[in-house]
Length: 294
Ligand SMILES: C[C@](O)(CO)[C@H](O)COP(=O)(O)OP(=O)(O)OC[C@H]1O[C@@H](n2ccc(N)nc2=O)[C@H](O)[C@@H]1O
Ligand SMILES: Nc1ncnc2c1ncn2[C@@H]1O[C@H](COP(=O)(O)OP(=O)(O)OP(=O)(O)O)[C@@H](O)[C@H]1O
View 1 (cartoon, protein in one colour):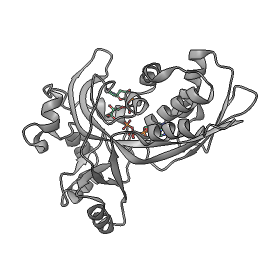
View 2 (view 1 turned 90 degrees about the vertical axis):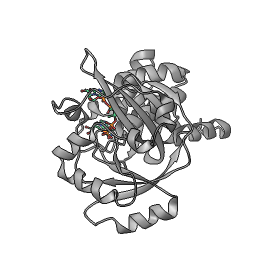
View 3 (view 1 turned 30 degrees about the vertical axis):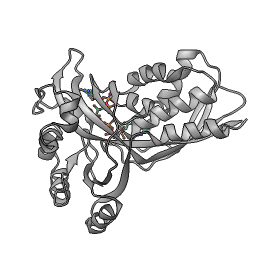
């Protein structure tokens, strides 16, 4: 039996501009993906026989066949005709429907892990293309770099962001991405800006905003309150379509100070921004140490 234990990190959208709606209903956008050092953990084991994909524990409200981990594994089997199976254990820490990309990251980790354990050798390009079929946020996790993104989030340019610490606050609601993108009140007409302007343009606060925030605040008073509360400490924003909100802080000590003040009703954690995903750091390490044990 071979096995591999890998992280599935979270992401933040440091900005999110919705610039149009395509004929297939998906929205064209511009975003700046910041990968974090916090997330879920997945353990993969490949039994000597059988093609079953077995995942535990189950996620509340998600049928096994709909779980992005199982879908990613089956998509790989279909793509390659691979006759191997996997037993997968998920340690879930990221809130679902939180805008932190947890499900997408789980899918990306599965693609990279099984590509390695099943000796498929598909490589990052093909895995990113397969990942896009599973969700718009999957390719950035497959590529594993904080990145400027266009299209639906699949046209990626890796960027080196300044070292940063964040406090992330979960207001206790789960928000459906499809519901926000489908809402008639969502504005979809932001101008297309250059990556340069986004990264160092005229005042990040004008550019580093999220087009979903207005409608999410209106639909979810809990998010509205969380944003106002966190806004005391800096430039608080929504990530993705919510529900989580985040604030960049001047280092870990300040993040700890803010965490101590968080009202009991909300869950919160601190995280460090990474330019290289912890998943890719771990895979480089696994390569070096021959960690995928025979
Ligand atoms: C909001 C973001 O998290 C920002 O990074 C992503 O754009 C969402 O990515 P995701 O969760 O992987 O989204 P998907 O699972 O691909 O899509 C969920 C639903 O959101 C809508 N959707 C998603 C992405 C996009 N660019 N336009 C859309 O309109 C579609 O109705 C789709 O059915
Ligand atoms: N492995 C998984 N982890 C989390 N959610 C999953 C998973 N598989 C399927 N899902 C479904 O996907 C939905 C979105 O989950 P996810 O945690 O990725 O939300 P999100 O952080 O808002 O995503 P995004 O920022 O990509 O929009 C969940 O509500 C759940 O129904």
